[in-house]
Image (cartoon, rainbow, N blue to C red):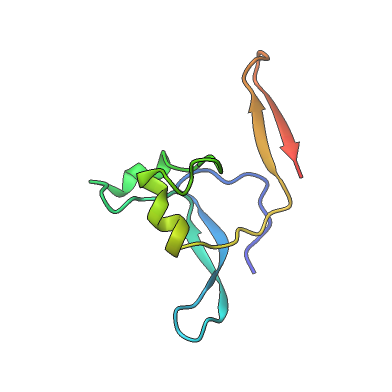
Amino acid sequence: MPAARYNAAPGQAIASIDRHTEGGLRALRMRHWGLVPSWADSPRVGARMINARAETLAQRPAFRAAFQRRRCLIPADGFYEWDARSRPRQPYWIR
């Protein structure tokens, strides 16, 4: 089991649970956080593609195929959102 972590940044390895292609069994795997679209010239694009809006996820070319065919679960007990209006920026933990 991976060690607990309080912050994960794009490009870092994080735990994910996905369905194994053979037999449909679930497996815990370490994956790099970020999406590298099939049309990307470099894997570095994945560090910038970390968030998608639920309202447009199925329509956006960068996320559409991954949303339909390559989904996984990320075990987490919360995430941070940043309030850009405050100075310095204030993180809020959402759980």
